[in-house]
Image 1 (cartoon, rainbow over the protein chains, first blue to last red):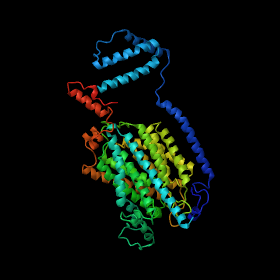
Image 2: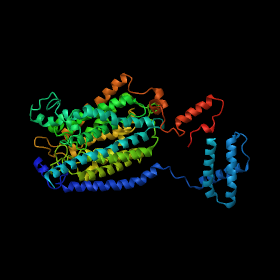
Image 3: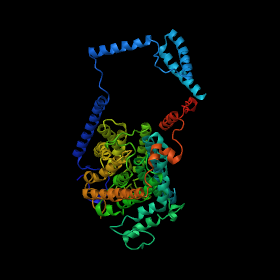
Image 4: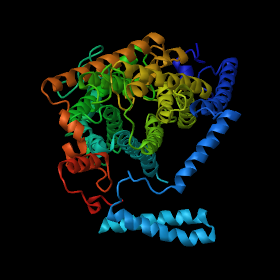
Length: 135
Length: 469
C-alpha cells in the first residue's frame, strides 16, 4: 500500500508529508533514480534520433566525388551555349523584369559584391513584381 | 479589523481565487482555438475556429439552463437515491437534506446566481464549472474538424458538455457522489471524468462521422493530412497548458472558515503540490512522447498534455517522482494509441481519443494502484483498484462512448451530422461562412480555381488579378 495513513482521521489531521510512500523512503529513492534514468535516456535519444531523422551523409569515396565533379563540369557547358530554342518566348512582363535584373547586376559585377548584391536583387525583384501586379 | 471585515475578507479570498482561476481557464479555449485552427487545412481554418468558439455559447447557455442543476441533482442517482429537484422532499433523509441547498441554488431562477450580497460563492463556482464544461466539450471539437456540420457539433457539445460529463462529475467528482461514497472512486484532476468521458464520447462520434475525404487510400491505408500551421497548433497547446494549471488549481476547495485546503472529496491537499506535480508531469510527458514518436512535433507537444492528464487523477497525493513515472508511461503510450486508432479507419484529426480518452482512462485507473489504501472518509472506502477500474469504465462507456455514438447515430440518420461531399471538397470556410480564412493569399482553392479558369478561357488571366502578397 502506498498510503502512509491507516485512518481518515490520521490523514485529515496530518501535519507533514501526505504523499504516496511518505512512510517508505526507499520507494521514493527508486522512483527518483528512475526519473534520473529517464532524463539520461532523453538526452541520449535527443542525439540518436537526430541522426535517425536526417538523411544519411553522402558518400565521400573517390568514385562518387569524381562523378560529382564531372556532373558539375558538364553543367557549366550549358552556360556557354545560347538559350534553348525550345524554351517558350518570355512574356512582355518577364522580359522587362529580366532587363531590370540584368541592369542591376552590372555594377555589382564590377564591384565584385555578388554576395551583397544577391540580396539587393531579391529586393528589387520583389518590388518590381509587386509593381507589375498592381498594374 | 472588525469581525465583519475579517469575515468578508475570508469570503473575498475564496471568491477571488475561483474567479481568477476560471478566467485563466479560458486560456484553454484560446489554446484549443489555435490548436484546431492550426491543425486544419487553409480551406477550413475559419469554420474550424468558429465552431470551437461557439462552444462557449452552446455550453455556456445550456449549462445555465440545466447543466449546473444536473451536476447538483445526480450525485445519488441511481444507487443511493433519486434525481433531486423541485419535486424532492428536502427532509427525506440526512443526505438529501445536506444536498438540497446546492440543488436549490442551481436552478436558473435561483436567487443565488444573480447579484446577491448573501451569496458570493455560488456564482464563482458556477463560473468555474461552466469553464470545466466548455473544456470538456472543446475536446470533442478538434477531432471532428473539416467535415462535421456546425449544428451537429453544437448538439453534440451540449449533450457532452452540459449533460453526460456532468452526470459523471456528480457521481465521481462530488462529495455526495455514489461512485465516491460507495466505491471510493478518487479522480482529483478529472482524468476519467473530463478527459476519459470526452475522449470516448469523441470515439463514438467518429465512428458515425467517418474519415475526411482523402484520409485513406483505396486499400484503406491512412494518408497524412498535414496541419496548415503547425506553429499555431504548438502555440495553442502552450496556452492549453497555462489553462490547465488554472483548471487543476480550481480543483482545490478553499472556503471561508476553512483551516486548510481540501480536495472536492474533503481530503487534505496543498495548492503548491499542484504546481510542482503539474510542471513535472508536463515535462515527463514531453520527454516520453518525444522519444515514443521519434521527435514528431505534433505528438511531442501533445505529450505534455498526455502527461498532465495521466497524472491528474492522483495529483493531490502523488509524490513528484511517482507523478513523473506515471506521466511518462501515459504519454509514451499515447502516440501508439493514436496510430492504432488511425489504422482502424478512425480519422481523429487531433488525436483526442489517444490524448484524452486513453490517458484519461489510464490516469483514473492507475490511481487505484499508485495511491491504493488512502483513506477518504469515515464511511467511504479507501482508494482501491476495483473502485477506480469500475468507476472509470462506467464513466467512459456509459457516459462517454454510448451517448456519443447514440447521438451521432441519430444525427447521421437524419442527415444532420456531416457536410456534403461537395462542401467538404470546397472547404467549410466557403460552405459554412462564405468567406475564406486567408483571402489575401494565393491559397490552394484560389490556385485551383485560377487554373480551371485558365483552362476554360482563351484569354490569359492578368497578373493584376492575383491576390496581393
